[in-house]
Image 1 (cartoon, rainbow, N blue to C red):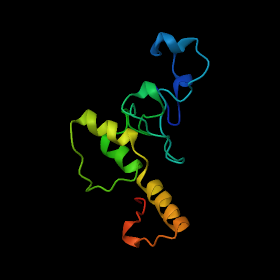
Image 2 (image 1 turned 60 degrees about the horizontal axis):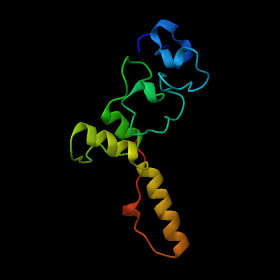
Image 3 (image 1 turned 30 degrees about the vertical axis):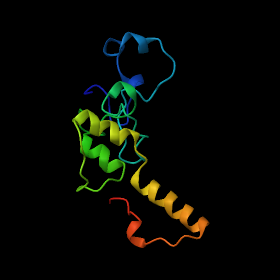
Image 4 (image 1 turned 45 degrees about the vertical axis):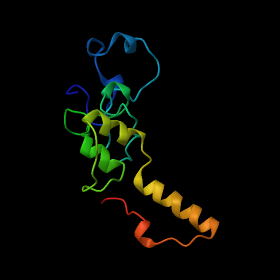
Length: 127
């Protein structure tokens, strides 16, 4: 991860650091890539703790984003209570719809259906 420059990805890495399957491969340019401070985060999948699965490396530190950072990206509040093992939590985060998106969809469906809904059910994305 140290070899990937800011905003970089697999195409910025020397061949000897790439898995053999990527050395001659054309495509999958986001794998082994760093997230960017100035762009939205990529879609988080269940594999977001594996840098070979996408642009999941921290923008400036030499590591993948933490489970807490991934939860924040998805819009979960800091006091959200997770259950299960670390692997269970990673899977829950990767399989979830971002909280602000789910709230917006729910509000739109409620408006369309003529159902009044409380402002307390809406979620504001974290700053």
